[in-house]
Amino acid sequence: MTHNRRSSAAVLGAGLIGADLADRISRSDLLDLRLVAGRDENTPGLRRLARQGLPVTGGGVAALVETGEKIDVVFDATSALSHAAHAELLEPLGGLLVDLTPSQVGRMVIPTVNGPDVLAHRNVNMVSCGGQAAIPVLAAIARHHRIEYAEVVTTAASPSIGRSTRLNLDEYIDTTQDAVREFAGIRDVKVMVNLSPARPPVTFRVALSLLGADLTDASVRTAVDAVAAEMRTFVAGYAVAGCSVHDGRAFVALEVAASGGRIPRYAGNLDIINSAALRVAEQYALAQHPADQEAS
Image (cartoon, rainbow, N blue to C red; front, side):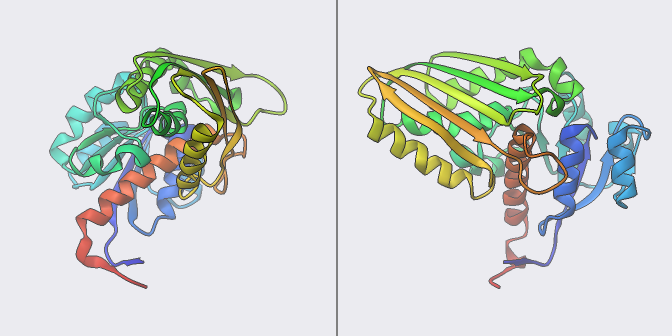
């Protein structure tokens, strides 16, 4: 597939998520990175991106607004508390706003569950890294079984968690729980987050415990394996580390290893949310320029 016109893109935030996302966009066949706007030109992320020759500024959202340029896709990789103000400031620029914070301001999107919703909304929210890993599996199992309770335990290596994510842990938990309820229809949900200081750093892991009716090894494993195969089309390191059912209780362990780019393999939390955000943005870009697509 070739694309003659790329959609313009910008990134707000140059922390762990924003800097990796900028790297990915710079390699995209569908998006053209116009600007990475951080709060301070001296932050490590912005300095590294500048050394790569990418367009950066330390002026934050104001610098992006002041360009007056219509940006087709803006990714917000700052904080949940800032997103509502950013959305209001960026609305006159038009285009799509992809929120990588757990703000719940826009339409929550899980690419394999409701990906097409990106075409009907101008502000979409990527929920959380744990939500992106767990919800496709939970939704698939819940389509065939009545699930009474779900527990989602996310474990991420401490070095892979930036300052904004640490400040947003309450929002992370609330947003992930609400997304599980919406997309999997499970009312009783508990989400927990572990930041592991272990050395060497642990690979990103999400453990799911479910109580439900008529759960069997065969039915659960079939659903989980189908989801994993679909997820690996855009998150190569997505893997099922364990799956078992006993007396109406199901346990599924998922691991995500980062692949490619500049982030370490253990930082699958960064990999999965950025891969999901890029996926929906590229779907949006394709829809904006359908006439530019040609079969290779």
